[in-house]
Image (cartoon, rainbow, N blue to C red; front, side, top):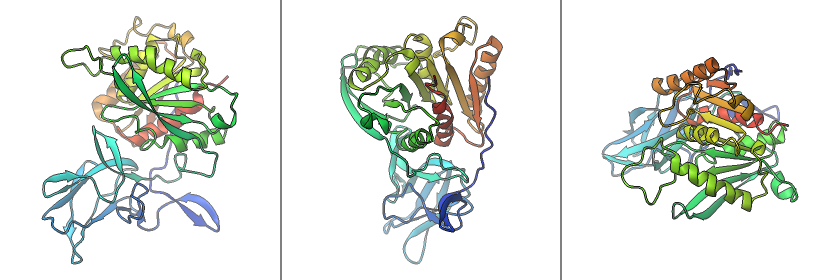
Length: 379
């Protein structure tokens, strides 16, 4: 089974007023980025998708901005402000940094986001005709920040938890659960901020396209306090133990969850996708749905043969989902595409999706979640 490529229009958008009716349309003038700090005009996104950065560094000698994989030198104007306009950017979310006299800093005009193992600026370039991840006038769920102690790691864990609008209104109701992981270099904040998960789920649930569900955005790292030496990042043995013995039982005990495998899913992006496939396939008694965005397969040393992927998988899981961006790094794209081909050859039912025109980035993963979430927990 395969889902064909989505023909998404790739261009800039914003909500504009047209005859008194709000609709999604193209940018007609430079517009402040939605990722700016409140009250900050720059950076602006232009109709051609380029971005203009303007900053006040009165004592600086050189200023550059690195965005979209390219460095752009800013020029100091007669008003004393530094400014540059980039080439047109690919739609979606981009991390970026500034460099002032050799020192890397975040843009003082931008919100900060955690990625690549440090906090940095971000700019969201919207796409035409698409509003599924924008905030709308629909019932809103809540995202809670949960802290709890792990005996296995002898450390405190922090998790973001999405609760659908129905959770607090329907006090006697229990809900299915999706465990959703971030990628390497990111943390539990990613899906709720860069990923726009709250908006995506609120909108899907409001349209009755997705079942109301709890989503646990766990900090998908677990360090064995007794381990020595450097650990293989693709060896999920200890994190799997923490997941099975502590994480799932904790949330089943503290939230109104449905606790059977048919009402529990596991999914992640990039490294989190490999974690999800490894843990999910190891525990069919716990998970009935598995997804991997820009990352899937059993690690480390994923063998793609009938012993690793037996046909019994077809009877054990409701959905195996795999996605990748068409513009991902060649090795990443080939690895995920080859897994899809191997599973087809082995007769393993799965859904495969390629996000057109996107790379290893949040727009690929937003699109994937928007497609994957409505598949879950259907009776």
